[in-house]
Length: 107
Image (cartoon, rainbow, N blue to C red):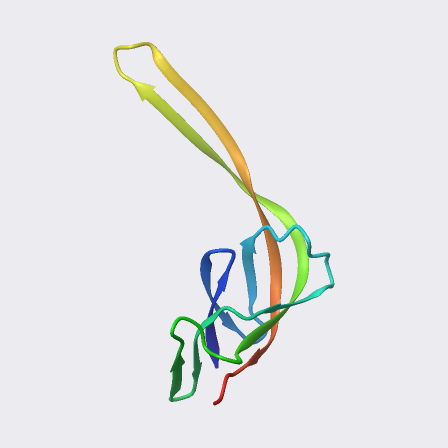
């Protein structure tokens, strides 16, 4: 059984006991339980429920593991023959969650 869930504008495939790295959830503390109700699709064996746009009554329940920063990403802009070059970098922040349960809507 798995579900496609929308978390902060990104779509993730959530399976039970899966660990997902999602965009930073500032309000969540490690150990806290979260519910995501923006479930776009649920598949349970051969049964598939596709939402329009979301599946009614479906939820993905997850526990926050921790927060962190990803690898450093570098952005380099250059305009040839102009003497223009800019190098920037950043580390994207994330929240690691563990999916504990998927509650299906009507299946």
